[in-house]
Structures are given as structure tokens and as C-alpha cells.
Amino acid sequence: MADQQYKRGTLLIHAGVEPDPSTGAIMTPIYQTSTYVQAAPGDHKGYEYARTQNPTRTALQKALAAIEHGKHGLCFGSGMAATDAIMRLLSPGDEVVVSNDLYGGTYRIFTKVYAQYGIKFHFVPMNDAGSVEAHVNANTKMIWVETPTNPLLNVIDIEAVSAIAKKHGAVTVVDNTFASPYLQNPLDWGADIVVHSATKYLGGHSDVVHGCIIVNDDAMEEKLRFIQNSCGAVPGPHDCWLVLRGIKTLHVRMDRHCENGEKVARFLREHPKVAKVLWVGFEDHPNHDIAKKQMRGFGGMISFVLKEDNMDAAVKVLKGTKLFALAESLGGVESLIGHPASMTHGSIPREERIKNGLPDSLIRLSVGIEDADDLIEDLKQAIG
Ligand SMILES: *Cc1c(COP(=O)(O)O)cnc(C)c1O
Image (tube, helix red, strand yellow):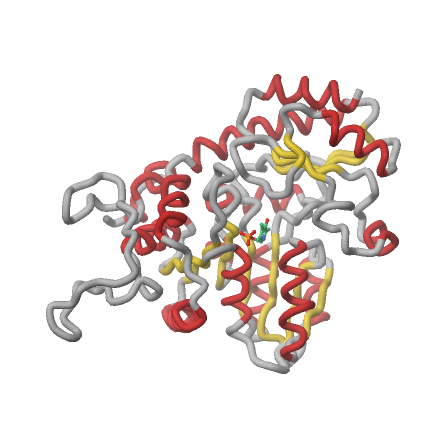
């Protein structure tokens, strides 16, 4: 299938998937097997052992490559396993420039796992992409970007950061989990590696933990595939199947996430007890122009700060919602509410957290695809 000639919705449904050659099954089967029978040593159908290849995973990897506008897709057992594989491209002495507003687990693997192997990380604000260059030196091998960021919803200019990386011979990695490939394709803006926690929007139904990497460069793919097979953090076929199934409705879900996100963000902005609403779709968002350039929609991730800025006021709202479930994670069909200061960012000292723009009462919403009126009513009664 010449995937690139189709429009995005068609691609999401058909990319990577062929009728099963043995039965004609329209949906790729879950090949729950560990090995494959050979007619004679080396005489096989392209599959030898399931850590190395699995047909369900192959279909998903092809689909992911097509929808991210890349040449190669690689799947992993979680988003963190995918990040781990990317870090294994580096050697002791290498340096990485990282956006400072970052998923907590990514911050943890960098500072607590890879720093002890002699890799140096510089956490810098990237709202002004031009300022990134000051942190690049001869040892810089990678620039790591997460955009939009979590939970402050800053937007980083992928094209500008990638150009700086290229100039200095470093690779640009973009964690595209928050936007999903439906709203943003970092490879189109010059990034070298895209990573996703497919646990979130790609899976979309809060029923699977999964990660993936998409690249264009053949040599880079070969290195990553070697790491994938050697280190072995591969997903099982059932998890690959769940993500493959999730992708088929990504466009329908994302359109509704964007629509509901906008309605909820505008409601919150008018609420007398709310001090500030962070959502990349607002015209007065500081990076709205960049968001408009590199994103096709603004998503359903919203953070807001209460006028009564303390933990107790936040907890009252968090305990008061009935539809919004208090939980970590994001990107599923059901709406979630969370409190970064005590949940995902609880390990950061209070002063440092507040200095970085994350106040006590900041509440993060992953707006789901329920009816927006019900979501707004739920927030109305919880905020009071
Ligand atoms: C959840 C998440 C990850 C980690 O993915 P897991 O699937 O939980 O391992 C990485 N980056 C972002 C932005 C995330 O939201």
C-alpha cells in the first residue's frame, strides 16, 4: 500500500494492515507465539524468534511509521522503554540538552539512571528556541524536546531547535505523546527521532502500556533495532494489537478531544474562582504562533490555577469531581483530573517547583470525549 497518497483519516485506518495471508482476516491477528518453525535451518518466512520479530508488531510498526511521516517504526514495552533505547545511542562523556518542563519519568531516567553512566544533562527552558544554542558544546550529541510540555503546556519550536541541533551535529528527539501524530509530526519539522508513550492517545482507551519510536534514517533505525533486539524491552503481541486498534479511531477521538478541550478551557477562563488557564489554543498563549505553525489542533490537555492558591483548595476540587477521575496518565476516552504538585511532580522541592511556575493549586485535566456539557457541569459543581 502506497501509504503516503492517502489523507490522514484513511491512513490511520489502513496503514500497515493487510488482510491476514493465511485466512484473509481483515484485522491483523494476535500472533501469540514465541517462535516460528523453519523448513531447514535458515529456511523460514522472515520470522525466527518473537523478541526479534512478530507479525502483529510488524503491522503496528508499519502503521506508526506511516502516520508519523517516517520510514521506520519500532515498538517497546512502554514509553520509558522506548526512551531507554534512545539513550543507549549515547556514550559516556556525551551531553544532552533537555527541555526543563518535562515528563517526570523522563527526568528520573536521565538524572537517576543515565547520569551515573557519565552522560551529562542540561535542563533548559526552550520557549525561546534561540537560547538553546548557548547550552550546546562539542560534546552535545542530542537535544531532547517535549512539546507541548507537561503540565505547563509550553510549546517549543521544533523547526528552530532541530536547525540548531543539525548545525552542531546533534540529533533532535521529540516526545510527541501530548500532541499525537494526528496533531503534530515532528519529523516534518526536522526532528530525527520521535518517541511516544502509546499508553496515552495512540492506545487511547486506558487499557495498555506501550511505547514507540519513529525515524527516517536507515542507519539510525539499524542501531535502534539492534538495541531493541539486544536489550529486549519488546511489547507482547496483544499489546501491539490494542495499539493498532486504538490508532484506527485516533482522528475521531482527537477531533473530539480538541473540541471538548476548547469548550472546557473557555469555561474555566470565565470562572470567578479560577486565576489562570493554560491551554495552547488560546490566542494569548505565549507560544500560540508556534502552536499554530506546527500543530493542526490544540488538544484536550489543560492546566489551571485557582485564585485560592493552596493545596486544600485544590484537593477540594480534585475530590469533588464525579466524571473527571482522579488518576495519573492521560489521553484516554475518559476524562482525568490530576494534581502535579502532589502526584507526578511530588518529588520536586516546593520552592523549586514554584520557581519553575508550578503553584500548589495547579490542576491538570486530560479532557476525554464525553459530552462537553456534562464535563463542564462536573467542573462547575466541584469548583463551587
Ligand atoms: C506517560 C509518558 C511517558 C512515559 O510513558 P509510559 O508508557 O508510561 O512508560 C513519556 N512521556 C510522556 C510525555 C508521557 O506522558
